[in-house]
Length: 182
Image (tube, rainbow, N blue to C red; front, side, top):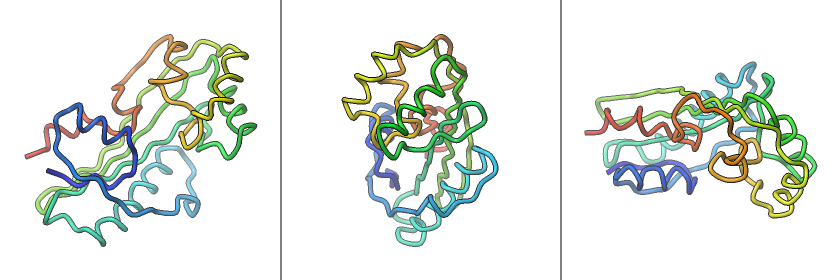
């Protein structure tokens, strides 16, 4: 049993699918305070910030602590969660027909072990259909999603090539974590 310090439904689903027992509760961390020069640095700082506040609150003696964060990047830019529909449109257009990297950082802490991993999965997308983008924007499914979409959702039919683990792109590198579970 571990404590998933994340409110992400997708991360919870990944743990369930992998047969990893967990409880889910977390404290928020203000990612807007981060100043980072690269996507990897940003995702590491965000994960470290979440880790510190959750470790202070919950510790790791009752249950090992698992914290993660994910960032989407295209053309060297961090694609955060869209603030509104127009922002989402710009983010999607930047990904259309491009190489998109999804970088996940996770920290897993037990009383005897601290695992820090930064993994990335690269997606090579075909161009998104403009009408499909507009329908997707109207659905509201882009809200709260880094890069305004999920590879298992809207972007799935546009994937030309993948390099890396799908779980990493979904927000938790399960394949990296599993060997360290006791």
